[in-house]
Amino acid sequence: MPHLLIDGKVSARVSDLLDRMSLDQKIGQMTQTERLSITSAEVKQFHIGSVLSGGGSCPGDNHPSDWVAMCDAYWAASMEEDADHLAIPIIYGLDAIHGNANVLGATVFPHNIGLGACNDGDLLQRIAQVSSREILATGADWTFAPTLAVAEDIRWGRSYESYSADPSIVASYADRFVSGLQNNYGDDAVVACLKHWVGDGGTTHGIDQGETTADLAQLQITHVLPYIPAIEAGALTVMVSFSSWNGDKCHGHEFLISDLLKEQLGFAGFVISDWDGIDYLADDYRDAIRLAVNAGVDMFMVSETWKPFLGGLRTLVNLGEVSLSRIDDAVRRILSVKVAFGLFDKPRPAERRWSNDTSFGCAAHREVAREAVRKSLVLLKNEENALPLRRSSRILVAGKNVDNCGHQCGGFTVAWQGMSGNDFVEGGTSVYAALADAGDSVELSVDGSLADENKHDIAVVVIGERPYAEGMGDIRANDDVLVEAGSQIKGKMKVLSAYGRSLKLHELHPEDLQTIASISEKNIPVVVVLISGRPLVVNQELRLADAFVAAWLPGSEGAGVADVLFGDYDFHGRLSFAWPKNECVGVDFKGDEDILYPIGYGLNYAV
Ligand code: GLC
Picture 1 (cartoon, helix red, strand yellow):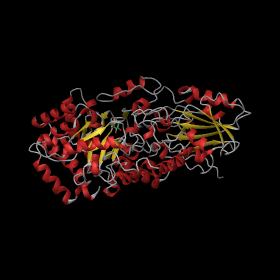
Picture 2 (tube, protein in one colour):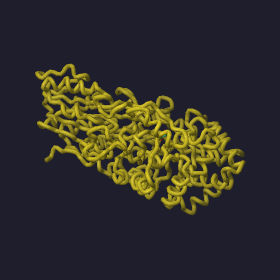
Picture 3 (cartoon, protein in one colour):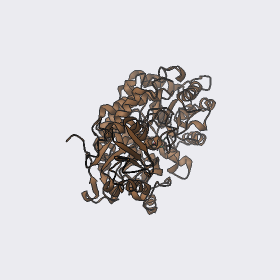
Picture 4 (cartoon, protein in one colour):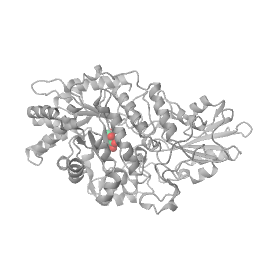
């Protein structure tokens, strides 16, 4: 843990603040509200410690200047000291999990599942550094990243937020990404947030916010492991998981939060709840607050219910059900992060070095993203030398994802559930646009109906999933699994409508196989590019394809796909998740006979 958090000067400054704070000011500091539910005046009146943007919650026209103006107003209110209010700067948080992709014009990086295939820690650190500058360009201080989930069941809607199903691959990136974001607390650094503590990727059947059943040893070698290098790298915040461990919700788990994370792993920053995550601990809201505070949660993401939270916690302290020493511990942790990170010494957001900086979405940043796309692609099949494409070939491009930057980016892009089309990914390049730019003769036919063996030498068909986020990305064969999970969990479980019922692409999206078949039956060789948030069962699509590329969720820089398809660069990516032969994944996995391609698989041009 960074010496700064336990540095004498920091703790002296924090003690001085604590000694001057009223109970209401302390409780306010422990509260994070969503921007749409609070005014700047209320931030001051209720001494609020943090404001956030939920996925897609964007001010004004959603350009950096709108964000800077918003952050500046909240910051100014928090720093207006008077007889009733102590000047303590708010910390503004958002989900910049693959670049600051909420904001129009941002550089949108591949989601973590693609980065997991890159096997390049230096690249991850550069991605984090670029992301940090594009977060600072909007006046914010804190990103809820990196996700350190180890996704054990690809039916989980958040599999794409996981680097790998292999804990050692996740661990190899964890410290690099934290170092890239927090960058020695320099002026181009932001606060990192490790999430979601702990076991979010281990739920039975991959149910989002479900039940992770494992003994402590298994939990530690799989889901705790990646947090160790990240904490050693100085991560300043950790977010608790909605999921449960052996039936007990993480949000109320004193052993996991206080004993294991803070005591044993020595985490000295602060722990934040997830979005209204405490609501699911108990029917009575005050009971829920009590359970979470006493378990060791320090800051509470209470989105709209922040007034009941303030009142409820104050009552618990007055009743002696939450000790003042627990309150002081939480506030000391929060203030230590703010002091150590220099938030008290920074100018107001409108006057900071990186606010509104022209490097936001610039060509140099996009080059880093384009490199990441190239390195993330995994070649699963290449017969008859279908790849690399020849520039002089007459190329037909088809498939529902061929000209759709929104689908390339996936969830947490401009909107929580992502976008469709090209308009909202300002500055982005679709795979079609990139191929048309690189090739001499490229014709677009999304459904493939223009395919003609007398006019086309080869076809590139870009298929796969539409954007989704969190539980809305889950694959659930039936809802019986929800009953099973719910029966194991003490407390309530939030369930969102699932993305689909099958991991088989031809059942999930039959239009894709139809497009491939309609072209293949005209004796035109087909190169399939799969845009998806996870591996899928693609046996039928593979059979018809002459070449097959896993492109994951590549983000705004589709040119990275063209670079490799035309052979300007060789394939580099290696699977960080096993590719399934059937739907026997997670708890249904029987053994190698269920695996089509193992972790580490990937072909190259060079033989
Ligand atoms: C969401 C996610 C979490 C995100 C938070 C704020 O529910 O679980 O990953 O950081 O809310 O948007």
